[in-house]
Image (cartoon, rainbow, N blue to C red; front, side, top):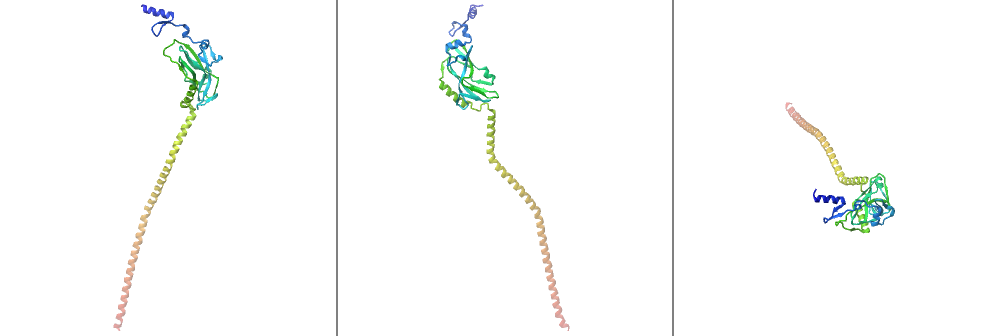
Length: 289
């Protein structure tokens, strides 16, 4: 084993680690452990804290503001099934440069079917409130009210890093930004399948109703026109069936009239002949005497 390897083993045994500039530094055991409530309180990490909210390894944040889906604030809200609401903590966190926090939803709320969105790690140097979107995945409404514990913060001490930056968000700005975010990003239709389905169906019906006002008269006119053509076609076919008979009757009448005319002409000729014959006979009788 070389000298460098031996030094590394000794450093690990003594609890040393290499710093940013390559120097070996002593790592205290409590730097790698979860901070207890006494240390959290001594460091003043949680502002506006209540003594009964401290836990053995963390602090329970309580509800300070309730932002309804329409952006209005409430002191008590009945969260419907599949509904969403944003909850802002009453407490402010004042994170030191060597402390970060892990935020979790309370187990009791999770067992009731509530899910917290937008939670996770709070970075070192953060100064401000903590908020979360609470979604009700249960089949029954759930009550959210001021003072109710909803998040658990567990704090961890780490080595101070030069990459952290202080982020201080005033309460008024935090609350106003949250109200705008709720209205613009979520609204009261979040996960509301019945309402969304109803709105989609209504929109589709309205669209087809508008089209129906245009197409129904067109279709009715087309059907009427087709019916007229069918009726006219039947009439024309009947007319074509009747017309030959009419022509035959007219031809027969013309032939009959011509025959009668010919007969009358012959009768007149016979009458004239008979008269002329009678005249000749009368003229011959005196001579015979």
